[in-house]
Image 1 (cartoon, helix red, strand yellow):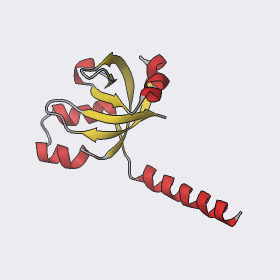
Image 2 (cartoon, rainbow, N blue to C red):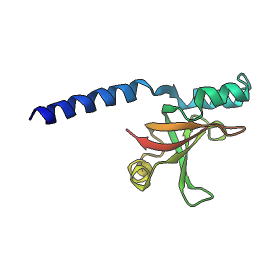
Image 3 (cartoon, rainbow, N blue to C red):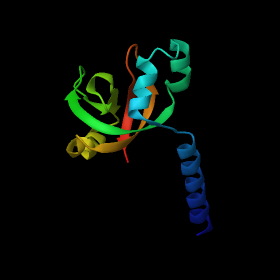
Length: 124
């Protein structure tokens, strides 16, 4: 019983550390960082690439990407939206019925010239 309790405490601490390390940002603000030119390529890369981000915004669309994976657009404006790639088919299934609604996605930020991207996204 002590081992189970210790494992549970360890898992709770790990979850809190993981959640604390995520950068929370509105999808429209995230996209603006890439399109405004206010930050250099080096700053964008160091601030977002490979970092865990929590994106909040309207799921504008779900489309099939070049590799056959489902890709979404998250934000306020389809032309300036964050391009999001989902972690797996279960994540896609969970958001498929939420197009047009506000969603929260836990992702990994990526750098792509000209627009914001995030991968390995999973909905709340």
